[in-house]
Length: 86
Image (cartoon, rainbow, N blue to C red; front, side, top):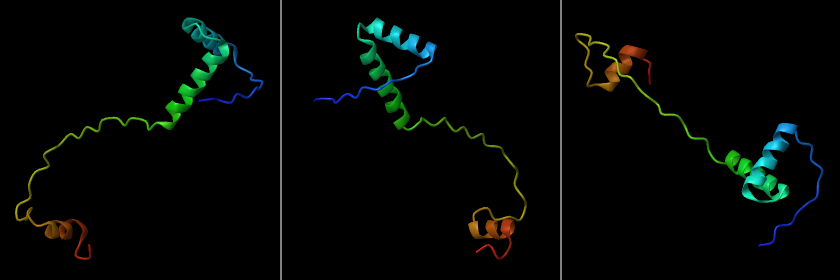
């Protein structure tokens, strides 16, 4: 596979430039190749969906009312939202 390259001028902050040089040097590759790897990794990470945190539901006993039929969803809706809930 042939990848076309484009020459461009890029202004990097000093800390970014230094980190990219350290990255490249540690892998024994050129600054250009290291920078391309870093940019590809950042772009790939951006396109992946972010993992969602775990939803933790804590149940709480809220008691039972006398005379309420908890087996009838319709009756519960009517009690909570009124007769016109439909």
